[in-house]
Image: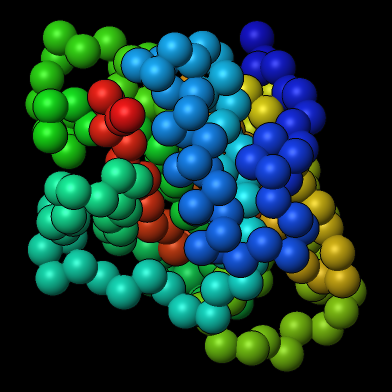
Length: 234
């Protein structure tokens, strides 16, 4: 059974203009999150919508990126300030180096998750249900990869691949439990955002996406970005 897709205006949810910078988006999210956090009397579903709105607007940074996230000296764990709510970590992931760069899709797996008693990697505690660890997880897709050298593919070929990626995402929506999604094809470029309710679902969707891309002669360059929110954020 496919997931349900619904439309959320992230700018209206966070109360920012369409020209807002990433810093303004982050600040607006943090203000709203502190106000609507369940510990402050807010509703859990409202808090999750805030997280999803932040995730949607963060997806734009993938399309604007000019380089891959700098790899951490210790990719399995990068420290972040304990005193800073909403700190982020970045980890490198799958990379099909055997596929030409101009045929690689840039995929960011962005997860908004709780810090639970100061523990970053919540999967070490099996007693915590997955739904309580994550507020939102999404896959942000961009092609051509902004980090790849400019290719000289003819316009017809660019349009063909972008259209093919649209078909891939449509299949992914049907085959995985998507909460909401958006995608667009414009001038031989493709961008998409798909939201999931947990890390496990987004990870399985990433695996399905990878298989679909490889079957079509395409590859991916993937990294993971985590935004941490303290479980008790007042």
